[in-house]
Length: 476
Image (cartoon, rainbow, N blue to C red; front, side, top):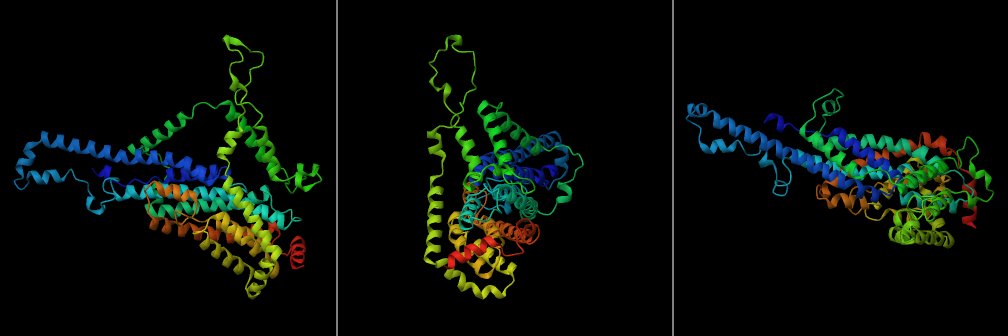
């Protein structure tokens, strides 16, 4: 009985799920990653919780058999009665469970494990989205607005963003793992992180079996998956080699700037997927086994226009387009310049304090407003403020762009939160408590990064010429 009641802490399972989710979220949207990983996490949690029930049933039946085989031992103690014998079968901590969780979780510890794993998937998806410029719509909106507002600035691209954000994501992932473990599972890292070889428990065996079954369901790699994987690797290499910085990239072959952006690579390779057939071509094997030209779908491409229309997030396109119109209206009417002048009182503060206030402000607003809408509203204002205070715009825009993604305290903050909340393991108070810590971790790490390796990477210690040109144009 003591072995079955010993608390189990899936520390390494938590870390593995968070690492996998972070890697997937670098290249997929946060919503798609969370929707793909959460069913697997839920299946593993069900196996882990059900393992406790099986252990209790086995131990209870063993105790019953032993009591039947040794009647003399019970007869010697005249104070025992049948009711006292039945108490041995009851759960040990049944009084500690409320009515809503008594029949779903074997113990409060099981409930905490479910909370921890579920919320960690949402946070890991958010952290992974920060790593690449394509990870979130917030980063894409920032990049497009920055290139339009400062056309002469060739500072931010896929490679520089990755070099800056990858250490941030790595540090945040480790700190968030520690924070979630401490908040829900306690501080027993020494025991759970021990590298000494131990015998696997029933829970570990069942969770490993479940993960193996999910992997076997994938089957062998197909031809469309091979083509898509090859294009994905090629696209990543082309992004990194467009403007490496230390050597001339392939963008030097094009004179016009519009032909050498990151979008050029993604659009071109995406267009090729409309042409390559979904089935592997078999040259020289026509009309075999009576198969004539009846198979009309043999030349169907990997991506069809119907699939594109169905999966394309048109609402994001409309929202981003509306944001550009709003930014252009603020600049043309002079509203952004007027707001920037009203912030001259902040000139007495150090630059890091101005960035800190801006990050705190957007972190509070983005909990109630969508991330794309928040960054669309604040980008023109922060650009004008930076130009007025003669701060390098990137010193404010990059931390603010990252902090807008930290909408992790409420289910309405971003879609991954809503997906995790729909599984019913956690309440709003749990999300607020855990999300507040993740917010603080992200805020501190981003501010440290922008004041250390960010200064040398983006030359943030001086006011650039490309910002002066935009400032003069805006005042005219």
